[in-house]
Image (cartoon, rainbow, N blue to C red; front, side, top):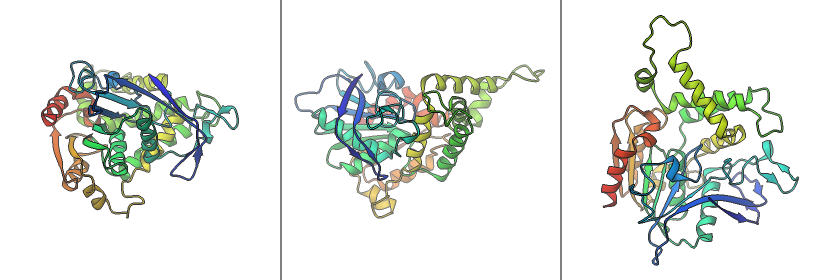
Length: 336
């Protein structure tokens, strides 16, 4: 992992400002002489810049996005807790961590940071820009903001706006964090129990009825407590608390809520999508209840050079991570 420090104020879409910016990023492979082999991966809510780790099966040696062939870049988003400027960073004006004073960040702000890093790395063209879920939000915004920089676009389990269903889910998650009695404490560990509950809510939308019943049903019909499904949800919550932060989770769900490609661009999605001239592959998951297939069908009906692959998977929204073998086959065929 490397770091790019931008020592100048950054104006944010909300009207706020960050006095400076640090971006954590990871690269794999070598930029060729023509600078034509760049693949940029945009990550989802709680991921980091090490795409070869969290997207193993798609990114990495001998995979479809292979560093032997491509120069691969993944940057940790602003507001996260994996090295880029976020709520736990030191505010230069106070010498203390930002915590609750960290300003609202939108998807466009994240993309603006990506663009600063692109320029720093001397990248003029991106051969393939790719992202799933919230990563797809960033990728679409970037294609609108820098139309001539990106040649090909790969989107998975994503949508052109955050839906009312998504906003409602995120609000429930933030309510869980806010209900934690430690949430107002100026501490890196504030809201940890609330974060566990928020993750539990999230898991119900990342998976679905079918996969939960299939994998977490107890065989012991005499049980009165300690069910597999309960243990699974507890485990997932504990695991996230050990690696993530409540401030970032609260903030980044707000960022997702604000996602709307047509904001400030006339208010109508169809003309904005029609302006996206990149050759585009879109993957949707049949059982996804968070970003359902209807969202990807809407995208493919309006992005001029788009193709849709619907993957029949029981894994719901998490299918864009779990079904890496099937996704790789489709991506490899599309890339030719």
